[in-house]
Image (cartoon, rainbow, N blue to C red; front, side, top):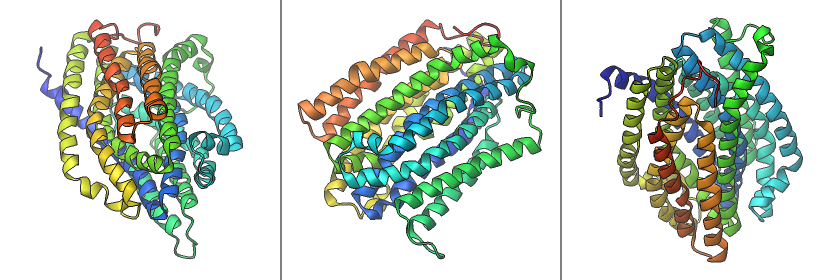
Amino acid sequence: MRNIEPSSLKQSIKLAWPISLQSILVTMLGMSDIMMVGHLGDTAVASVGLGNRIQFVFLIILAGLASGVGTLSAQHFGAGQVGVIRQVIVKTLVIAAGILLPILLITFLFSDNIMGIATTDPSVIKAGTNYLWLTMPSLIFVVIVMIFENALRGLGQVVFPMLISTIAIITNILLNYWLIKGGLGIEPMGVIGAALATLIARALHALLILVYLAKVKHSIFPTTFFCVSFYNKQEWTKLLTLVWPMMLSFGVWSLGTFVYQLIYGRIGTQELAVMSLLAPMEGLLVSFFFGFASACAILVGQRLGRNEFITAWVLAKHYAISAPIVTFLLALILLQCESLVFMPYTNLSPETMALSHDVFVLITFGTCLKVFNLTMSMGILRAGGDNKYCMLIDISGMWILSIPLTLAAAFYFKLPLYWVVLISYSEEITKAFMFVFRMRTKLWLKNLTAESVA
């Protein structure tokens, strides 16, 4: 195996750390919502966790759309075609609007029914419905942020998105503390306060990005929406062919995560509370390596855009090998800090805390597999536009194998939560084997700027 070039390693670190830091901060923000309502008991934790999971389903579908912008941005940048990125952004915003508006209407009308699918606890349904009514409209701002952030990352510009994200996250945390607990003339708002803080912070995030890009006249900021290329049918076809498998794949996966949450919720409110407070902790480990996978996608994509296929292959192998090793070491460190991790949740019942400690160890090491699959999918295969195969892997691992087994474990065999969660990781094992097979075929090594997307 060729050694990775020192310049590539340096570039990887330069790209990865701002993205990872931003992703970690976003995950910690999700944890802060849970932590700051923790003193209100299991019901508040369960309702916010479930509301976030429902919102997550739609957010990830939109993230699949935005990821297509990142893929094309990296390859067009590598090919020296930066001007094309502006119209990719415009088209993607139009697609996002067409998807998001019906989702918001349906969620607003039927949010209590959606919550009722996952739990039979009336107090959880009521609190979760109120949370959704305020947080779901904020996805309008989230999708704007994701599209422009992915475009900037494709150009290798990762520090600015991190800085703006940090401002929004700090704003959200401060508003959380104020609105949830009350003060300065505001009565304690509890779960509704957490939702309102999220809405305000996300609106600020989008506004800051748009104002800055417009003010500096950035090369990716659209100066006009409906230029000649907007009506180019071939370009629309190329974009849609690239993004629909990503959106469907992301949607299938995020819907599956909601089904897992539904299973835990139907076992009991305590089990739902446990998984609600542990999900962000798992996300924290994954987030640490999201920048790693994003840096891989950027560097591999740029080399594919320059037809440097051998270099792209060497980079991909190094990323695939190193990701799970580093994750395992980080998991060991996290286990040593277990008492600190659970410190904010001391107000929860002793039974909830005991169950959380048991599942925490399992999730910590299971994340190593998730990070490997993230790197293979987001960092390698999708850098070459191999989205249809990734979609098939997600459907196979999750819906054909893991979800039926997890349902059987929970409701037929009535196993304890620990074993139900363990069986759910059959998805990651299956996907890991399928990703390795696909990577070794090298069929994903494609220049999307020079050919139609398959």
